[in-house]
Length: 333
Image (cartoon, rainbow, N blue to C red; front, side, top):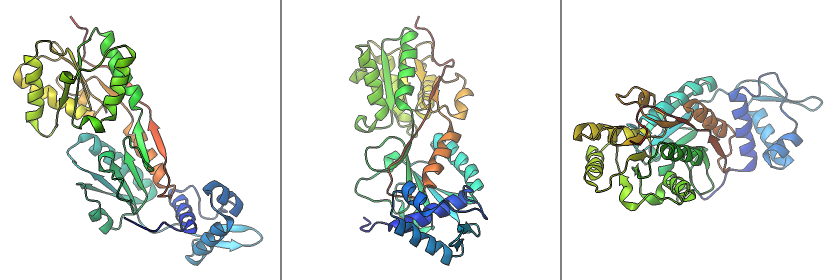
C-alpha cells in the first residue's frame, strides 16, 4: 500500500495541467487568480503559488506580477489511460472502451485495455489514469494514480454508475404490468456483491412481494453449462417462473441461447429482460427488453472525473437509465 500522499501543491499542478490538456485553459489566456484556485481546490494560497512556480519552471506559464499567470504552451506529455477488467469478452466493456478511445483523442491521449485483476502491469506501461470495473476494488490496496470505478462501491473512491435503482424498478414494474407474479433473477455474482438484486428485492418488497431463493440463479455468461442448468431448473420446476430478470444483457443472451437449445420458448414460456442495452440486443432473433444508459455519457463522466486530477477525491457521477421494451417480454397468458 502507498504510505505517502501527494503534496497539495502537486495536486494543483496536475489540475492545471489537466485543464490545459483538455482545452479548458487555452494558450494565451490568464489562469484564474491564486485566491480563486485556492478556494476552488480547497488548498492554501501558498500551495497554489508553489504550483504556479513549478509550472513556470516547466515553461507552461509566464508569470507577470501586474497581469497574472499566462498560459505559455500546451501540455505535451501523454495522457495514457489504462482500462482494467477481469474479462474483455464482456461486450459492455468493449462498447465503453470504444467510446473512451474516441473521446481520448480529443485530449490527445490514448487508451490501454487489459484483461485481468492485477493492475501492476498497467502501471509498468506508464499510464497516468486508470478505469476499473467495480469488482476489482480492494479496500486494502490504494490506487497509485487517479482512478475511476465503473459500478457501485462503498468507500472513498471515484465511481460512475447507472441509476440502478430506477432501472430495476422500471424492469420489475414492467413485468408486473404484464401480469407476471413469479419473477426470477439471474446473476454472475454472489448475492452479497449484487447491488442490482438489493434494489430488485426492495422494489418487490414495496409491493409486498419477493424473489424467492429458488428463483435466484447463477449464470456465468462464459460458462454455458450454468445457463443450461438454469433453464433445466426452470423447465423442471413445479411452479416455474414466468419471467426472468438478468443482471445484464450478456447474461440474458446466454440464457436465451440455452433456452433455444433446450426447448424453452421465449417469450412464450418465459419473458426475459437484461440491463445495459448492448448494440446486439436489438439484433437477436428475439430482441431483448432491457435498460439503456448511454455509453458515450458514461465515458464523458469517467473522463470528467479523471481530468480533475485529484486521486484522493470521492466523486460519484450517475448516468440516467431508460427502459427499452422489445419482443422478449409479453403479456402473461
